[in-house]
Amino acid sequence: MKLLFTNIKELLQVREASVLKLSGKEMNILPTIKNAWLLVEDDKISDYGKMDDLSEISADKTIDLTGKMVLPSWCDSHTHIVYAGNREQEFGQRISGLSYEEIANNGGGILNSATTLQNTSEEDLYDQSAKRLEEVIQQGTGAVEIKSGYGLTKDAELKILRVIKKLQQNYSLPIKATFLGAHALPLEYKNKKEKYIDHVINEILPAVAEENLADYIDIFCEHGYFTVEDTNKLLKAAAKFNLRPKIHVNQFNAIGGVQAGVENNALSVDHLEEMKPEDIQALKNSETMPVALPGCSLFLSIPYTPARMIIDADLPLALATDFNPGSAPSGNMNLVVSLACIKMKMTPEEAINAATINGAYAMDLSEKVGSITRGKLANLIITKAIPSYTYIPYAFGSNPIEAIYIKGKLIK
Ligand code: NIG
Ligand code: FE
Image 1 (tube, rainbow, N blue to C red):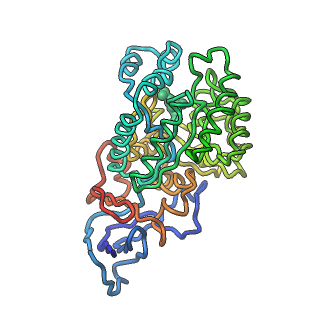
Image 2 (image 1 turned 30 degrees about the horizontal axis):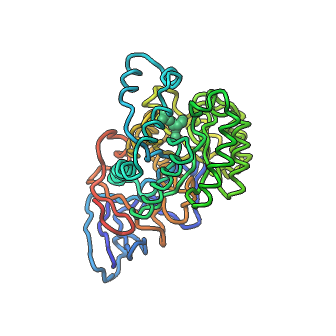
Image 3 (image 1 turned 90 degrees about the horizontal axis):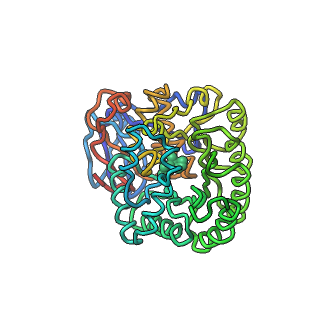
């Protein structure tokens, strides 16, 4: 099947296959072709160019995109899409003045979601999660990472990871799975944190590996959750099963999680709302992608990741949604790109790069998605007729998307 798009107002994020991630000043450049054509063959991008240079191509279907733009789908490298129920009640409590920490200390938070999930069947959990996945695909996400972490028992963590596996089988976008058993300390392990970490390492992790249910390992490295020592211990154990870290660090406090991540060859370190100069230093000369989650900052009214400090230090940066019931109940990457510009002072070029090619890197998918490149998957966003690509972050809350293609197939 050959699909030819013609008269594209602007084809965005056109890259050579050798570009795997962008750092520092490179992030401010978004290569585009104005008045372009794009050829998709079966599930892949096969060629593109300027309309002026379009020679005869025999396609099965030609679609005129006058006034519209094409860009690679968003790459959302950090989500917790597989959860049960919701936490609207806590939302109300926060509006009336309780903090996220106070709610968690009163038995709410992650433990609240874990209880709900433990009492939800695998089928029901799949249905709830598939709905959310379909919603984010409609919003332009064409590759996604999904974490466990709302189970906190062996059975419930495996249940989540099996649901992710089913989503991988039933949906055609690339989905990466991350094991986050060390997301919070279950009540039955109160004052016995060592025991829980050992349980995760000795009981749950081998079962996850045995069924080949995860690509990555995660831990919430934060005061009141897990220490740098716990982090090092878990990451070293996971390395034996070839699970590379993608970890939650520096959300509320900079306690050395970034360094632990880099030392354990993390693919990404995520959140980074609190950053010290030593964290920036640790990221230099590493292969680790820093990931910002501005939806969480918006929802919890906490600081935004200091994107300028990170990018101006010549580092890369990726953007993701953190879609979860407690701190970011939205998987809308369009909004994330807007927030990055409005609140983190990223340029539209930096934000689009962070949400596509750098997001792909943070899932080890740079060779498959994240740019308009010959041979990459035809996971594409077709915009409505918009004046410029800046309009995408500028018109926050408005939906810039007219159509979505995943592996060359029209989804919306
Ligand atoms: O990434 N920080 C840890 N985990 C999630 C939120 C957890 C929750 O409140 O349910 C996050 O923000
Ligand atoms: Fe998260």
